[in-house]
Length: 279
Image 1: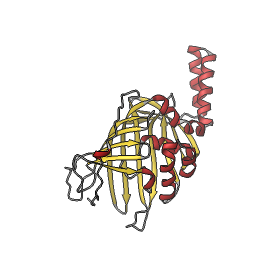
Image 2: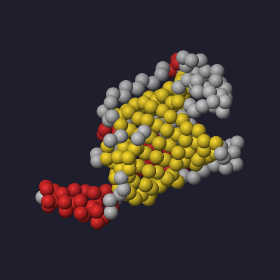
Image 3: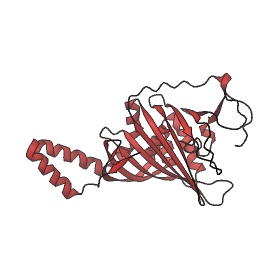
Image 4: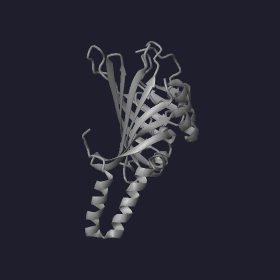
């Protein structure tokens, strides 16, 4: 994904831009624009706390996901694409696994269906019939489906911002030909779980307890309507087989708002009830 960054505007540059705009459009219009920009810069927390609600109002979108995991000297990246219905908290993703150590790339994509409280996966786990789905209760896994599925649930990712306790406005940049406002800060998963919607609350509470730390650094990029266009989280969790924490960088990109996202969950008869072997 190509991304072109612009330097954040200093107060002097903003004043000069306002002055030049005033020569063309009049002082009243210029003053209103500067005031709106100043409000975003002065109160980034309020903007971020409302970001999930803004997505619900937007309805739906396409999404790209990327998750990079690093432990020791090993790094792997898992990518996904799909659609998400924010109004009903449902999504559909195709997740591509990375090459194995032998360089094989013939893994079948994992199909994931996301819903409040549950994650459904097809082609996930050795020994699972190809026509069956694996169902995971997101409140019972230690990361609350922020990591387990190989892609962070886009709405859960947005609800993490409800726990933002420090943030600063860094200016503008461009993502997918759209100018966005860049915010950087940290969120607390415990605080986020208390402020989250009922369908996400238990998952975030599980993550707050399961990660190495409940503090999550983030970079958020919002368009002029307050919709998230890109969201980066940096998680840290303890792998039972490793002494040091595993670092995870999760990126969610949202675009084509209004795209139909009709997600139908699998019926009970198609849910695999047997034991899942390790790959």
